[in-house]
Length: 349
Image 1: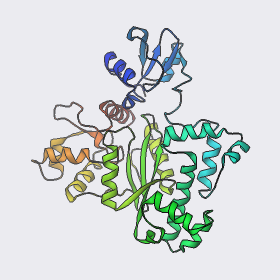
Image 2: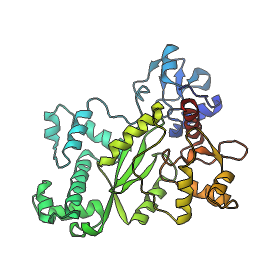
Image 3: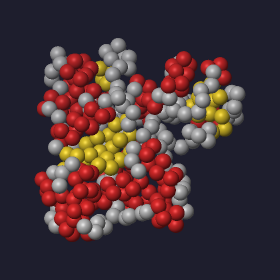
Image 4: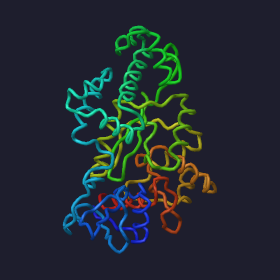
């Protein structure tokens, strides 16, 4: 899909500021070097007169530009490098695995390189990531009937004290409390508009939003309070379905999502979010029309506020609500992303 670009000054400012909200909106070709970059590239920024912008990498290639080796604009931002994928697949298929630096070297992988990638993309070391996967698996075992001792030894722990300390450090509560507690499993999913953070519990997807959204930290804390749960990275069966449906959406072949959702909130918020899901694909409503749709025509500001608290982007389509005058307003992921999503739906319906 070819979309309309923002104005040049806006794009150059986004390039200089490495603004993630413009990921997928444009790529920048640098005339003096002959390469093109994504908006968030960390390379030294060129002068404005040396840059031209394109809506897609394909068009930059057709104009003779080469992809930047640093930011790799031909792949989704956050995509694991080819050398790392076997390691990630192994960890996902065996959450209880333990891999030392020696084990990594035996697999032909530099431990320091792995550590740097995980710190950059997940904010933790690879060993911490593996430990979190083990704890998440142990939590599920205990919650659904296994003894603490069995869960500890099944996940490679040699002592109950070591297991208990690691478990509490990761989740914030003791293993014995698991039957009465909940965990929100979180992961990153990659999209053409940048990485998104997904959260799931047994009942459904409870979080799906752009990682660079300003309110992300607040939304995560609020979700923890509403569900009385802790957040830990890991794998969940619903993530595969979510990823498949989101990929199909961006390809234009999915207009209705079937992945189950859990959206805790006030009765009013629930009503607003349900009304959002009733806006047809490829169409828009004003805030006034949304207020009328829920039977409260004077609650325009309250509707707008509830839209802003939506924690499930795209699937609960708050991007389909626009200003009364038709202008794009109020989208947590950034107005350029909102514009992209609306153009995508208009061209694919």
